[in-house]
Image (cartoon, rainbow, N blue to C red):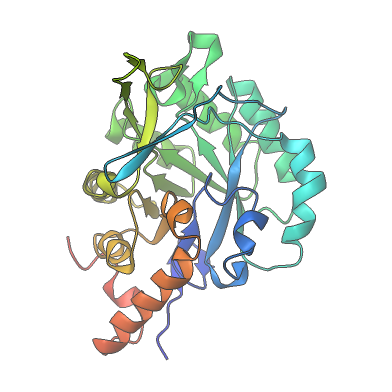
Amino acid sequence: MVDLSVRVGDLRLKNPVVLASGTCGYGRELAKFINLKMVGAITVKGLSMEPWQGNPPPRIHEVYAGILNSIGLENKGLESFLREDLPFFETIETPLFVNIWGKNVKEYVLLARNLDAVERVTAIELNLSCPNVEKGGVSFALQEKVFEELVGRVRHSFTRKIIVKLGPQIFDLEKAIQILEREGIDFVSATNSFPGLAVNVDEQRFVFSRKVAGFSGPAIKPLALKLVYDIVSVTRLPVIGMGGIVCWRDALEFLLIGARAIGLGTVNLIYPDAAQRILKGIEEYLDQKGISSLEAIIGKVR
């Protein structure tokens, strides 16, 4: 039998498939389609301290080979999540990652402290692509000093695993990685969606009220692969690769270039059972090639 388990730092996952933040909601939404006990880990939708309404509609716009989204980080807030959704996760043993975001450093730290008291949470994932309202709405990932302060203060506020999710927009990739290593961050996940635009030709206006939206789906896979390749090249930190994965071949591309696990995002909206199909495909591929362990091929193509 093929061994699909992977080491992500000192965390052992039963397999490399991680449900990425956003498209698996708070977990139960995908439980109608797949057995959540079978995936390597689940990352719940980005949480803020207080409930957040997000952006006005439209929020989703389909384009060639992908979608643009302008959800605006809508979520129910930490307290409601802990009360309404956390009990569900007590019934399954799959590692639980919680994506968090705030409008300033203080909110990230507060979330981290609150979640540190919740033992069921395996790791928190910092979404740094959201706007820092104290710095004029510029993304945290574009401000080196704020990025460093945020990462360092959250590290001192949360005692278990911390994942930092890097998107395509970062002030300097190598400098950012150096900060993450210096501050004791455990893993990196990459990538988030890419900034994109869409225009309604009939009405001669932008599709989204905020003009710019996040582009994800199959079309970004080569871009995501390049970013993950670059990150793996400059760090000893384990990387969870994601971006445009639709099938098991896509997933293997990320693993072969050195990602220790893979995240499924937009594909969950297209094929809610994608995790199951991708795992089956990886297992059959390894079996046909006579490879007994997935670990044997991670990072083989460099």
